[in-house]
Image (cartoon, rainbow, N blue to C red; front, side):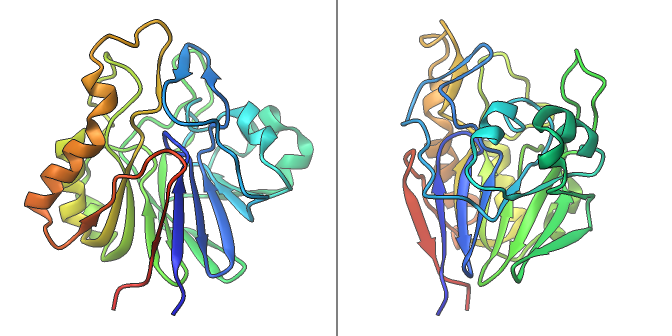
Amino acid sequence: MSTTSVTWWGHSTVWLADSGVTLLTDPVLTDRLAHLRRMAGPTPSLPGAPDAVLLSHLHADHFHAASLKAVPGSPLLVVPRGAGSFTAKALGRAAAQRVIEVAPGEETTIAGVRVRAVPARHDGGRGPWSRERAVALGYVIEGSARTWFAGDTGLFDEMSSIGPLDLALIPVGGWGPTLGAHGHLDAVDAAEALRRVKTAWAVPVHYGTLWPAGMGRIRRHMFDEPGARFAEHAARTSPETRVRVLAHGETLTVGPAA
């Protein structure tokens, strides 16, 4: 029976291998990103060139141009519809030839593995200083398993239509003590998202990696604890789901649900 493996490299960066296809999500491959510093885990060491990179939205901690340029090989770049022109400006014309734009409900196939865009409740713009905008997305990857990479999102009604799943990669925190809850999940809301999608396995992401430089001692619980707190809440709200809290660089391998 085929298996699916996921390696968490911190924040929203995940290496996903399914049915002979390798996918990389929202790569941040550096130790510094503007005012943010990598506070846990090693600098990511990718095992090779992925077949495709899935980008959820344009925020710099998800669409990080320097990291994308450092990804080996010439992978396809699956981006939210409307992000193609920004991708070309940020990464160059050669990268623009590899772009596939998708909107919620649209899909593409990568070597037999289907990648379907699903909604996310999150601001899709590059930032308040930029006019660049595109819709924020999550992705459902359908190979030997059905995997949901949620991107960055708050709760939304359509979540219940995403499942059932074999594996969910769910954001459970953020990168700073002043980051508001709007358009994000904390540990409690992430457990509610898990209840809605109904999945066999879940891995918390988007926490415990990046933190503002010079603020390492400020509200440290918001940095360290979201993964474990998510697991505790999920055990009560979705006892049928197995939650695995990965360390940076650790891999989980799962089989498809029966």
